[in-house]
Image 1 (cartoon, rainbow, N blue to C red):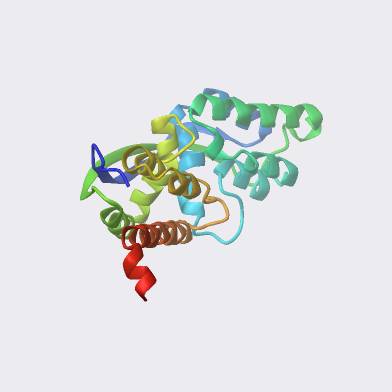
Image 2 (image 1 turned 90 degrees about the vertical axis):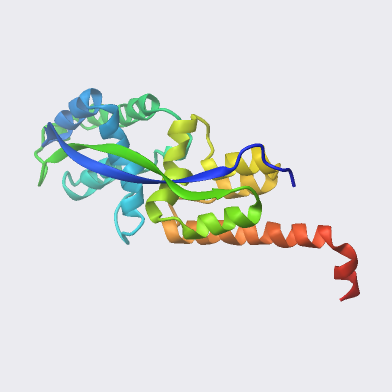
Length: 231
């Protein structure tokens, strides 16, 4: 295991939600909103709301899919929106383009639904992000495990989910540090494969801790082979 050049610094994050001046009552208006709204709004309704949807037992994990299902009564469109995996995106521009493509293709295929009024309007909101150091750092795997176990849901979401946009890699803060600083490439890759859609934040964290514990046991075994064989 390598000695890290720099420690892992845990951050906490808070989001201020701001309601914008755009709304949509039908699919055509939703498309116009998707094309014109801010990047912060796209982030809020996809990356950010994934964290809150982790605590729901029904519905989809982004607000566009949820509105298409519950308010516009367009199940097929909702499923297409939900099929866009935010783990595949390292820029808001690319995600916006695919959201618009999905909706534009649906309207082209089913023009009779384009101006049908929804039960309730969709209101475009924005997330304003404020980050602060969490007063926790890690220089080895034990300290890293303690940090992951101690941080808040918001901090875990920041490092594990939204970090993809900040890094512009298809990875997360945890995996990047484990690979680059400790040389634990296999552990980093396994952690990065934890599904953020089929897990809650709590279960994703629990899986990560189990993987880290397995790596710690492996390291202890490799460091003390004689002691292990004497047992």
